[in-house]
Image (cartoon, rainbow, N blue to C red; front, side, top):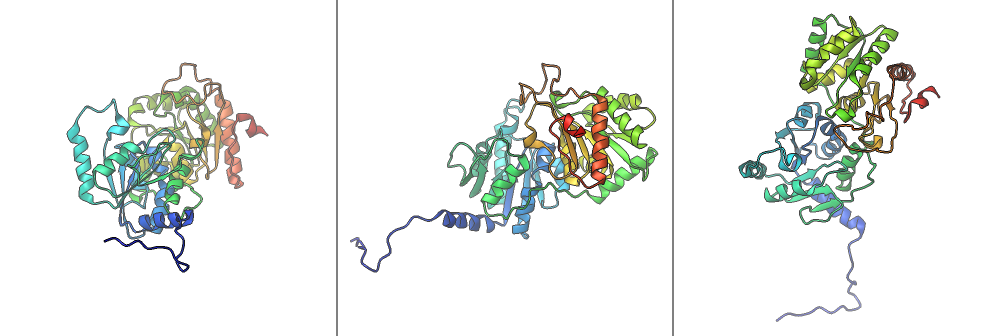
Length: 392
């Protein structure tokens, strides 16, 4: 027999939990986790930009085990992030659909590995263009009880879903907004990394072997992973040489191994001041190279984020493939050269319009770098949206 309780004068009326109460429940759930998985299976720069979120998690959970699921490219940046305990390196189907062979056993293997680690929660970090739901599905299949991500679409695969937020939001801030919504105390979102000692020693040795010891240098990174984001290397060589001649510095050239065969040609174009390290550095060593530089010249690529994290002055001819607000340096000294066009943002890998968004001459780029060096020496951060702002 079921008895119904009727409300008398002393009974409190039923109530709906307030937003503050719901937030407190969410925070307690995530702050009790002891084995936490962070999923960011993307490129090097994307992993570098997880730093503020990882830092916030580590401050709240000093004794938890924090594991990153990263792509083979992104995993190379993991040694720069001191908050991590472990890395799972995988090419995942939702990132490489169309490029990976059909192999269900590969996906089952990933699910079983995640299940075997018995994670308490999975935080799925995504960019403005990505969905967290494929990764959430994998986490659900692996039996991970807490799964969080930011999304426009609703799904039961996410136990905690946060608003997608402004489209223009910076990627590091997008990551940080998710962990803040889960109760992890957030800070200013500045990028941060630690260069391993062995990487610093290796770079010191490589530079010394090429005649550069304690002298200042310009670090020039000519290529981005997409041709549409790459400032013309021939023009970049002229700009780098002009900067070096004006400051009496050497030019150290860095490049991914896929572009290394061309970096020697650029070094020859610059002349005796050039040191070619194209294809000769790991990602931690590249960070060490950035850390020692007096100024960095780079296209929109991971080197831009490394410079920002290390507070090294950086000049970026920034193409119209992406919005500046989503990727730009924010806390280190920087100049972003950007020419808005009617096709911005195009998100293209190849530009069919002759790089209208990168019209800057080598002389203009060099002037921007010299002005930045002067401002940086005076302790002033610089982020002009257009070239003429430099001359204001």
